[in-house]
Length: 565
Ligand SMILES: [Zn+2]
Image (cartoon, rainbow, N blue to C red; front, side, top):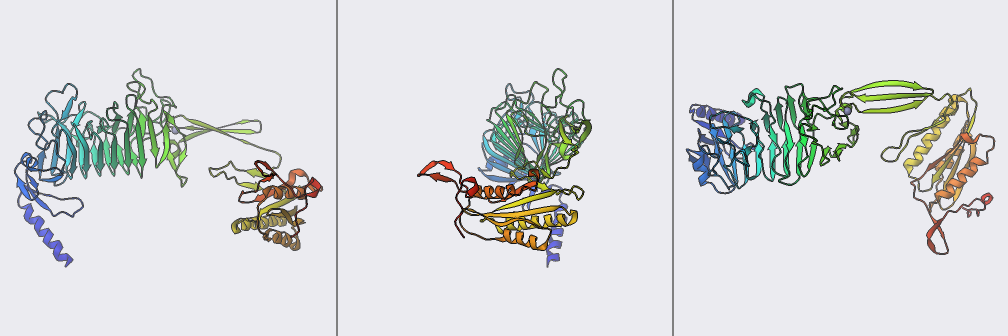
């Protein structure tokens, strides 16, 4: 059955192929029946029109007009004057990008203020183009050019979907512009039909640009993120796009100039792949040096973004005046005119920003000052450098801790002295009674590791345990764990269960006391390990809750003894 349907479709295609004046216009989602449209004609609500003007004249707000093989415009004859579709919300569906072309028109002479735009859809709320090639712009003599301020003017919302866009346009939606699955061939590429290298578009109009699954083919410039604040601040969303450049000294994907803008928010998400463009850098590096200031000055490290995705335009003065925020996968990487950090990672630890970090492009230099080794890493793209130093201690350190991570956690490593040193150590675990099973398990794991090291090194290690609820209880005195008997006594101490209250301070005091009581071990080799959820009691006196007191239950320290259990 499936085969039969397929062969019917094949037959239909063959029959249609016999008539060269027809083309198929099809909705990309396939839920609309295939529509047969005459060459250079149009179909609206099932009716064929020999010209697009006739179809647009008959159309109502919200209509879809299907186009055939051929070339179309909003107003072929005179782009100075509004076309038949002006003021209407319309969707145009072409046969395919290689069959249907829409020419945005350029005027004979630039208009005084609006320059080289096309007025054919003046005051339309929304105009959508699907399945065609859109060219911006074509002039009266048929030439395709990339002039100043081209495009469709005075439309609130413009959408291009499954289209090819050749050339340059600066005018887009006065509110929003959306590009879904659009291939941009910028001026300078063979596909654009224009020799001079230029941007594919300017963000001249509107408050929002969205690029989803787009491909940009460039000869050195891609997107000019520039406007003069006419439509408020502008957000640019850039998701899952591919950018290719044939020019080894290309500008970054977005060349931003916020000097006259109200503000730009640029959001990069998904997987954006950039080929043939260097990260924005400084003159002395392997980065891009395409953007040169008016006076010939090149960027400094502080001005370079170290990114292939965006840079700031210095050609007309400072284009980085602190009004741009750039995020990558929701993390702010550039704000207030500078990078937030040279190294910003995603939640999974992978590098998000900068390209210096993504490509691990660093030169490393090491110098030694006494016991200190200084390592300097310099980014090959932007020249940014970071210094780190290590100390070559010649005394053994028994305790090390990592830097606190973002959860305020540190990994503390206790190492026991080697067999030759024959030093003895005391360790006291102070356990909160409300300690979770997991944490208790961790404490037991730690105990068993200590035991393993004791067995390996022959060091003497005594371990004690204090368990606290509202009071502190010594559940294991300092005990040599080299014997199974001693080890099991300490293990039982950790496993002790008591109820109610959480007086951390009492636990700490009791733990300290236990360590202090052992005068045979050096104070530097005594360790107290607190295992707690961190929620503790505070004590007050005489119903004054504004002042906190601590309390201990240790008789020798002037406290009262804990109640009997
Ligand atoms: Zn860098």
